[in-house]
Amino acid sequence: MAPIRPHQKTRTGCQTCKQHKVKCDKSLPFCNNCTKRGVECVGGSTSLRPESEQCMVVAQSSSAKSSLTLWMQGKVSADLLTLELMHHYPTSASYSLFPDPNASVAWRTVIPQMAFDLQNGCLLQAILAFSALHIHHENSTSSQYADIATDYYNQAKFSLPMADADETVDINTVRLSLTLVSQYEFAAAPTVFPFHGNWYNTMCEVCHNGQKIRTEMQYSEFPSILSSILTSAPDIEELHDVSVRKAYEESIYYLKLAWGGSFNECLGLWWYTMSNTFLCLLEQGRPCALIILAHYCVMMKHVTQDGPWWAKKKWGDEAAKIIFALDRRWTPCLGWVLSQLDTGLNSQVFDLGAWVHVGEGDHFSFAPH
Image 1 (cartoon, one colour):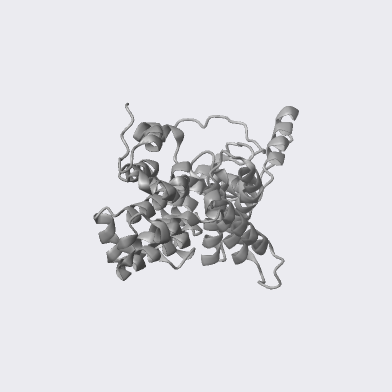
Image 2: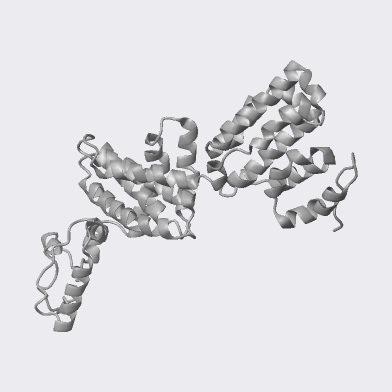
């Protein structure tokens, strides 16, 4: 049998390794054995270490101030923790946000993707906070998740004012983050009344922020000139038909409602409420119907600037095409629409100069490219 090699015993290993009778590698601030096994590393004496190394240990320990950092050092890395919380959010926590299945889909898929944009750190922090709180809610014995949730919540609250003041950050990101934070605060609040808790203040911020999302056009008065086509249209004869007049009146009424509404109302309310009579008038190319449609296109041009990718059409081009199809007699009904089109767009699609100088009954001519 080979002789036992002499070795010097050490008394500087951690107490946990000594209890399990395994060799401690004496890594600081926690040894690798304890880290791998996921157990608490109770350090041993450091009296035999150089003074500079002891100072380094103190510095390392003092830098790990938050409960989140302390827990991660003893359990898993920050990357693994983030993955765990991000996995829990779409697979479980997001379903508890809103009862509406359609809204749940967006919170489960689109919003997490937004959170990984480098500029949207506040949204990622809010998602991780809500996810950790949801885990703790499902299993109240997981006290470490409550600490993690608090840490991410504090990070989100700290980041939100800066994100709101940063003009390069998408305003929708701030509103989504505020919504998650308010739900977190509502869940964590011991009482609901009186209204003096953090959740109530944050909900007020959500409402205020939602108002900023609306465009200036949605706060402006609806262009009243559109209603004048019902009394002073060149083809006033068609308005003698009761069904035709009613179709125009309804289309203008619902367009006014959509004007001051949310993005979804602007997008869907008008189309979904149009009568078959009005749609037939559009198909026939009736000027009054086309002018109303041109107003809708201009409205959509403004409200979709910060909208989703699928709603970003060339609305200005569409309005210009409609104008091209009309003759000079309809000029008084189109002044506002023309004022809302981009100058560069006008010169590319149709010639504004030709519009002013055309003869009676003539149509627009395309500008040369």
